[in-house]
Figure 1 (tube, rainbow, N blue to C red):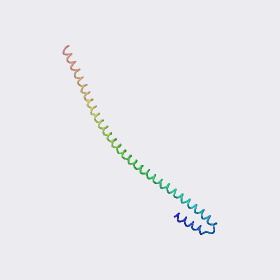
Figure 2: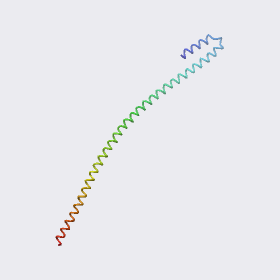
Figure 3: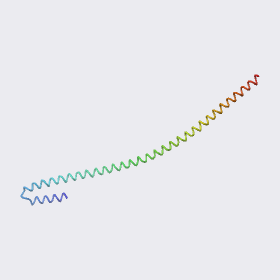
Figure 4: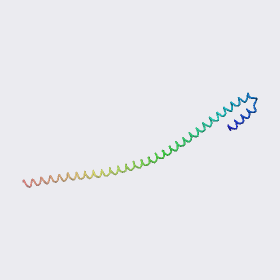
Length: 126
């Protein structure tokens, strides 16, 4: 469209009014060309920025997927750790219960041994 307009302006200048209008037309053509070059430059810049943004969005989506995968693995590990902790606590409770029972039994045996020793002493001495 810009080339067509430029062509039309140049033809008009060639068929113009003896030079006074042609200088004006030439100036308008140059402005049109300059504007067209600015549009082209900005379009190229716009396209490059869009490609860059698309690449950034793609990278962000990939990172988001990685975060999701890592979060899932982390949740699984946290769940496994909690299960292991519960199992260890259960085992520790059983072990402590066993030790307490054994300690109570030992105290009872110590008491019986002391009574037996007293009975032996009385029998020997008396």
